[in-house]
Every structure is written in C-alpha cells, then in structure tokens.
Length: 262
Length: 262
DNA sequence: CGAATAGTGTCTTTCAGACAGTATGAC
DNA sequence: GTCATACTGTCTGAAAGACACTATTCG
Image 1 (cartoon, helix red, strand yellow):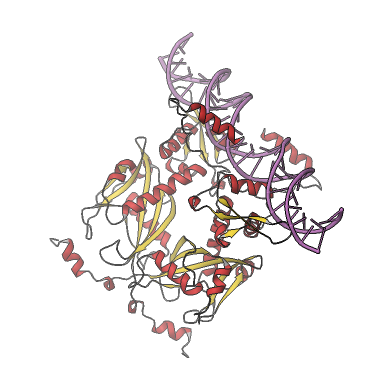
Image 2 (cartoon, chains in turn blue, purple, brown, cyan):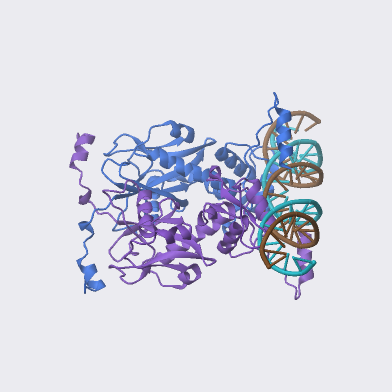
C-alpha cells in the first residue's frame, strides 16, 4: 500500500506471472521468373518439425531493442538483406494456434529484390525455399501460417493499388515497363500503359535518372524511387478490371440499370 | 533427436524461457459535446500509479480465447458495451517502454456511441474519465501511451477519409446532417453538404429508414448504416481543405503555375 | 524496310468540390 | 410572411481508363 514505485519494481518478478509465447513471423516477398514468391522454411525443430512455415522466431530479449529490430534480425538471418521494405501487418494471438500454449505472433511483411538475396545467400543451414504464391496458397503450412500469409498478401495487394510500394521489389534503377510489369504480377490484372506512366511520373513517385537501359529494341529510360514519397499515396486507387459486359443476353437490362442510376 | 512431437510437447515448459510482458491497450473514442473524446483511466496500481493512461491490461490466459477477446473484455469492463467497432491498430514492443522489462502491447481502437456508454456506467471503481482529444494530446500519459493514442488517432482520421467508419460513433439511426457533423469533428474540416450526401447515398453506405426526426425546423430523414458495406471503402478519399489562395500578392504567379500545368 | 519495344496525344468516365437554388415546417 | 434547417441541380475539375498514335532501335 505505502510501497513506492521503486520498491514495487525491485520486488517485481516477471516470471511470477503467466505470459503467452511471443513470436515474430515474416512474410518475405520477391519477384522471380515473373511470379510473386514467398520465402518458406522447413521447420528444423519441434513443434511441427518438417512442416513448411513462414520464417520467424522468438524475440531475443537481451539483444533486440524493439519488435521491429527482431523482424530485421530475422530477415537478415534468412536473406542477408539489411534494408528492405518492412512493415507490420497484424498481430494474432489465441490459445490454440500453437500446441505449446497461448501464443501471440506479430506478423511483418518484407519486400526484397531477388537479386540482392541471391548474391548474399550463404550462411544458411535451415532449409528454405522460394515458393510461388499460388502454390504456397495451396500448401499445408505449420500453425496458422496460411492465415498469416493471406493477411500479408491482402496487405500487399491493397497497397499496390494506391502506393508505389512495389518499387521495393526492383533494384535501385528500373524502367517504367518493368515497374508496370511488377504491378501486373501482383494485381493479376493488366494495366493501361499510358495511365500507369502518367500516374507515376506526375505524382513524382519515381524520378528519371537520365540513364537508359537496352533490353529489347528501343532503349528505355531508367527511373529510381523518389525517397520523398516514402509515405506517399496516390489520390485514387487503381481500378478493378471492369466487368466485361455480358454480350449473350440481358445486355439491355444492364443498360437500363445504369440509366436508372442517373 | 529422436524425440517425437508428443514427447517434445510433454517436456515443454513455457516458464523455462524468457518472454516479454504482453498487454492489450485500448483507445476508446466517443463524441460528446461536439468533441471527439478518448477514455482515460487514472492508474490505480504500480507502475506509474496515479498517471493517466489508456485502459488496458494483461491477457487472461485462462479465460480469453483470443487477443480480440481480451480487447472486448477490457472494453466491456470499462464501458459496459459489448458490440462496438473494434479494430487492431498496431503492436508496439521494446525493452524500454515499461520499467518492468521488455514489453509488448497490442493496441486496439474502439468507436462507441456515447449514449450507450452513459446508460450502462455503474460497476467501475477505477477512476476513468472522458477527455477531449486536444487536451489528451497535451497531457502526460503513462508509458508510451501518448504514442499509442497518436497512432489510434491517425488511423481514425485516415479511415474517416475513405470509409463510413464514423457511423459507429452514432446511434442506430441518424440523420445525414448528424453524420456529416461527426465527420467534420474528426477531420477538423468543414465538408460540402451536397458532396457528402451524394457520396454516402450513391455508394449505399447508408440506407434510408423511412422514419424522420425533428430537431430544428424541417424534419430530417433518418438513415441507418448498411451492414453490407462493413468493409466498404469509397473509391476516393475526401480531399484535404484547399490551400486558400494567397490574396495579398503573388496571386498572378499562382495563376501562371496553374496554367503551366495544362 | 519490318518487327518490337518505348513512349505520347487526347477523348471519355468517374466522382469529389463549389455553390446557388428549392422545400418544408415552426413561429 | 420570415427564418432555419433539409435537401437538390448542376457546373467545374482532377485523375483514371481507353486506345490510337508516334519514336527509336535492331536486324
């Protein structure tokens, strides 16, 4: 009752209280072979040994200053990359997701350039593999990692519609055609070239570097991401593909419906 | 090595490992007296006894099935409300935010109708108070709760620009003028009446109930939220207030700039 | 030259902002 | 009638979509 804050803290023993397990899990995305891929590991230890899972693990209370630092550490351990795009997606906690007991995981997602990964891969002994999204979606993953992967994907797809986030999947310099291609892969939808370029350039999301790159026939201008627009969002989202007008029948009634709106 | 998953789990002792403290904190918002307010409590116990803080606390591993359930329980304990708008904002964890040690908190934000709160207030013994946002922002709050409050506010303000979220601050039925007023309070910006109504009605975010309500002179149509559009987002955000054109001087050059764009 | 890729001109469409107008009811 | 509040008509403007067009390089 008359204890001071100092006394309270001196007598406080964290271990005296039940606490849930706390982990950090990572959905690490990259583009390779024209597909969006996610890095999965094959669990080397119990529980769920041998199952495919998102990389992740415990916070190192001694060395990780923050939760974000834990995520950076995990990412670096798996990919050798130290400055990726990294964002918290959500935190899931319940009594049943881990057989060891009540457990909470903070899910982060990272976007990396696959070339940067490939070069620095070396010091891994845990088996890990890049898996195409459509395949990963149909796999059985450990714990509730299928749900986590889904949440990360939804976030990526949503943000692709109104930000320049996907630049983080490309190297420093890129052509607008390459960038558009990445958008199309993520959204699984083709985009209008002119509208895409106008949007990127007029909002100054990307900046011309002056250099150019020859891939096919005509050389293409190289662009880089405008760091000023790190938290930039476009004033409108990219639209969903239009419902192709049903030409078989009912076309007239559809037109009537549209006119009713006016 | 040759241990089975069953054996592993039988020998696993959660307490054998260091774990951070894990809490859930709540930013509970309501509108009263034409102001956005947040519910703060005066901490009854150490640490930070006597300081103002966001309501929150530990997960009850025995009774809370999920993290969201913990948030619901906390909210109910403080407000008596069981079906509010409740959403996870973010999770903050680091070694320094709590003097007891490495600690993680999952922040949720809730929107409630103040009338619903008021009626059911009774069984509280911990001192709690509604505080206007501008005042709360200038107060000293326990731990990093000032940062948490800020994160929740940013989320609320952002979502107000592109969703119908603020309906959760009103009773079941409301007039469009009332709803617009709530938007204006949150955004601290006046909105165009016609544009606001068109947006809400044409997107079917709200539905006419047929009933009407007399407040001032002419009776106003009552609307209710369209549950179908729970996860609905408007195709565009409400715009920021235009920069009022500087009439003192430089007006001509401003006009030139506009024309240059064409 | 043709083929292929890079990049532009310009019209339409959608939806928010502006603002003046009309409608309804209390007094 | 006036006044206040509810509600509408309709023009402007910003930014996305559609699509035909030109430009540059390779062979």
